[in-house]
Image (cartoon, rainbow, N blue to C red; front, side):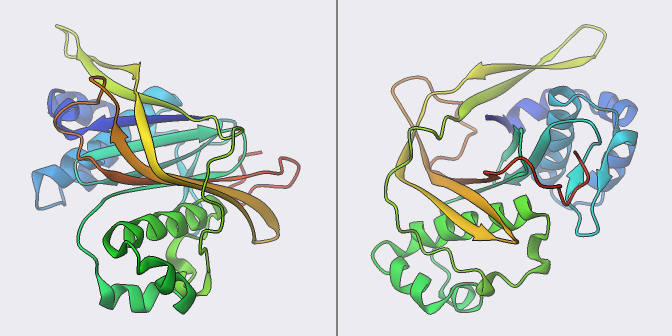
Length: 252
């Protein structure tokens, strides 16, 4: 499994004219955002899709619940928060979510977490609020339902406190390279990060088995993404363990 990160700082180095040429529909969507950081996140997600699948914008399809897919391409998913867009691809259905750790929001917790989940959050409420939210959203995105399913109906109170050796996830930071002709390419570079309080468990949901791997991303030594990458961030990835069943996205 491969996970790629792209910061707004890298996306901002790319000429806007290139985005209008390569991704006109995404540019129209981005221009509806009020703040520049949100426009950059929208462009960055498109940049990851264009270079890592790779596909033309016209090949991108969406399920009824909004999950993107491309027929004949690997399963993939996108997320963005703060100033970072992230992309994952895998050979089975997959979902990803990333969130910068912020303040604990008890009123939100009452509406999206079960009593058992809120009990688990008490020890480290701010961190575990975002940790648990990422787990739920990554699973619902992997399934293809997204938030059309009420998150409070999905209990994911973590039980296992260590990441399995089988959870091999390669992390890459993407550097944008712009040629004199103003064409853009992405250069993935291995990213060394640690997972604080990593959790891994298998859950049954929507008639199949899923593994959810999650933790808090923190830098190791000198090899970090760059100053624009807001650390720490909660990251969660959910993927199907069985390959033989049909995909809700029609990708098989």
